[in-house]
Length: 521
Image 1: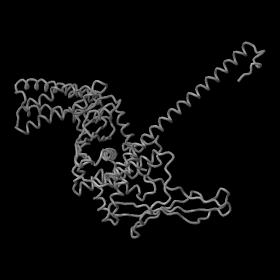
Image 2: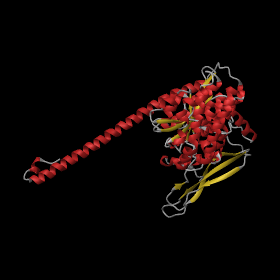
Image 3: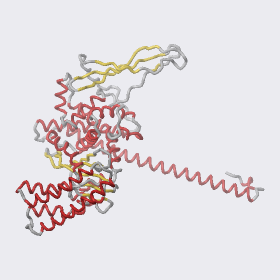
Image 4: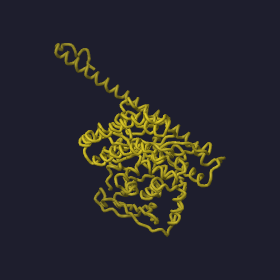
């Protein structure tokens, strides 16, 4: 503050300088106060969100515990009951992991934790030593090794268990009583026994090889240690939570592309309160076949409502390659352009020809065959050259096909199979031929349909998704596994490396672990 007495005798120029300085100080103070207010508001929102989320998860946890440990009147056969139990074990662990991440400060752990059963002594042992980089004390004296801490981890390669003994030497300075040890290696599951390799084995077996946990328990038993399926379920749930940020980053990378494929397939989901299943859906989204990025993200939803696709895509705008499902239609006209699937149109004629050897269907198939011959020729060209050839050679064929369809439609009776096949293409003609005007658009949706196929194969082993959480977790993990396969990676090697690096990977560099960017450490 400037005292009034100090202002006496000041010139007009000096008064002006004092006034400007006071205004500047006042402005800076106002800015600081506004910044503090914004910070307080942000912190309040975060605390409110975390409190609400903790309350929600705590309530959900109590419900799952009642389902898992209470008596149930559900009439399920042994296989279904086992699948439900392992789902609930995984969900319980996932909720507890989310609560652990939300609680701040971390919940104090009970010092009287139950002692873990010792690993079998007859399993092969491998010692992994962790020693300080330097054994010279800060005072200049040489440190002396006075003991060690040993933590045992269970590793697995197909058919063989190995015990990793992580030995951390204790080094002390006799002069200044300093004691040092190498830090504990970070783990995906804190204080758990599984190595990154064992966790990768469990996740790949469940989500790539479609082996339920009760089958894995038997397989591990033959290798010398039958890990209880409840333990395996807890590992699956915790790993699913830890992998979710990576899946979120993969989704963000996919949505950065202008051309996307979308498709969906039904999956049975159990309603534990009734013991019955209802039809849920797994949606698949990939960058366009010519976009250069090989990746897929699956999204599990409890229905086929178009709102699920809208929620996933959010503010994304571009060309969406999809079938004629009405759920995608609501996004059209809002910056999303529909690109049709030529394969779906062709399939209508193939089915018609298979059913009754229709000559009309055979003639239509010939048109589609000529269009696909051009696509085989241009698939490895750049977008401009692809568009030029499509315009020069594909456009006349497409126009001939449209004229032929219109003429045939006038000849066939309403409601016939031929009429339905013709109507499908004629009503969607603009979307079906949009690829002719854009070299970045594929002619069909086969690329994403190929990514749905492993899900259809797995359904025979799943029987059902045990809960919405279980379906969402499966979708997330399968997104990483299938994307790893698309990029030529062994999914076990990929997940093992991710589990090793994830605990210490900065969030700002999470993209380095995405399947299309991953390089094995």
